[in-house]
Image (cartoon, rainbow, N blue to C red):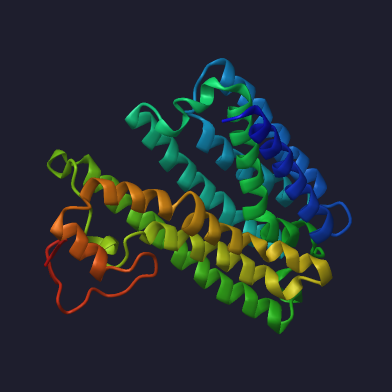
Amino acid sequence: MSKKRTITGIFLSIFLALSIALIGGEGYNLVLPVLYIFILHWVFFFHAYIFQTEHYFDAIGSLTFISLSLIALYFFRNIYSVIIGIMVITWSLRLGSFLFTRVKEVGKDSRFTEMKKDFLWFLMTWSISGLWVFLTYAAGLNAMISSENSGFFDLGISEYLGIIVGSIFWISGFLLEVISDHQKRTFRKNPENLDKFIVHGLWAWSRHPNYFGEILLWFGIAVITLPILEGWEYITLISPLFVYLLLTRVSGLPMLESAANKKWGDNPKYLSYKKNTPLLVLRKPKNSERLIGNKIVF
């Protein structure tokens, strides 16, 4: 990647994060978290570049979410910091450990093979990761550090509804992500499934149930924050939209679907599975498909 593009990417990441923090935050309350996010990522970037490793890339993202949540819980003790903090810490610990273990098992992440050799390209990637953390967490973080120090029994009806409905979405999404990731990891560990595609469990209902769960849980957090947002704070609702666009238009589904088409594009069973199984949103298998054990039979 050219030097001009990488430098532009670094500055755009910082500019976009700071712009949303200044516009959507109450005063400068989101600016310090943005600075913290980028500084933490850059510190670990230097370590990763010096030792030419990508093993801790995903783990640092999770560490940032967790540390931000703990800081917010310590300084801003309110019902939103408790609920959202617990949700984000739980999600971060689960996903971070899952991704870290997966990289360790494989031995490397092929995305970084050439990237980590180029200082600016690698730095841009770590900076974009910082932007990802902030945009994903913007709505939840704003609610945690902006709401008054109120207890659960001090809320109004709209706040209660937001917490209840949002929590239902979050729990549903989290369970979908955990179960589908476990099913796929178990499937891949079986030597008999080498070069095969998974079509059982939740993967019979969606080609990417884990991503649907991810989108659902961040939408749930946004729903929780909705009743307490005011004025320009609504811009922080970019969080669930960003997660959706990132996973469905940028680095998630397009890459996985392209790889699957290259690998199984001439396989009639895969083409049938692709035709009859939704890309993202879960749907019960059609009558033309029969489930035997943990497999779909066409």
